[in-house]
Length: 224
Image (cartoon, rainbow, N blue to C red; front, side):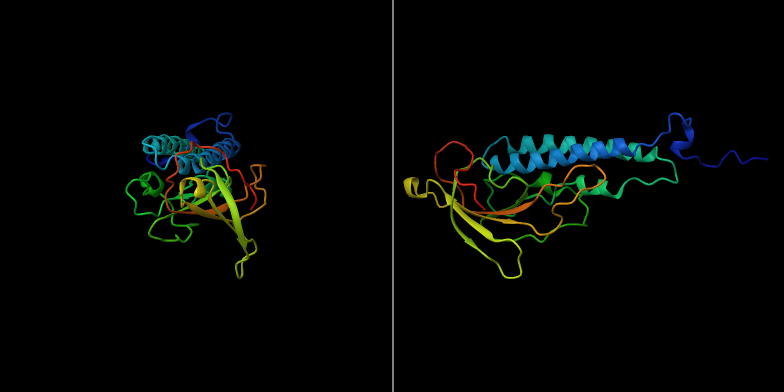
């Protein structure tokens, strides 16, 4: 007699015509997550002193959460002999891209960037300073402020030089905000099964707060 109590996987409950290969859909969702994380890396630093920062962070996290749930449901429908692409995990989480490490209470809350579901793998060491913000982003020059490059330095054992910037209005309005920009060396320039190139990532470290009254704008000097 057949044992009717045997468990069946969700994929077994669908006919073969429905239970198709969901990996292309998973890849597209992962690509969407990657685009959202890149957008998040651009938006949140530009809204640090804006009261809408928390709302924007929550909305972006909500989009990522929905896509994570959709991916989980699709993974349940994969045949038992098929596993999802390993590359998907690389685009799910951007907790490593935007990391506020300042003790300044006036800045944007980092709760959305420290979600408890963040995976411990692929996490990067945080650079701690009394008044600094470390950001990993594919677009280091568009953060809502205007900067002037004043120096560049080759760091020991580093492939790429570090560039130094100060606020364009340092002389005019005595704004002491500065930042450094350095291209990352790991995970650059290679393609995955999604058929799109991963963006080159930069580590940007901000020092001090902007005291100038100029409105947000793109950088004047984009040299790295």
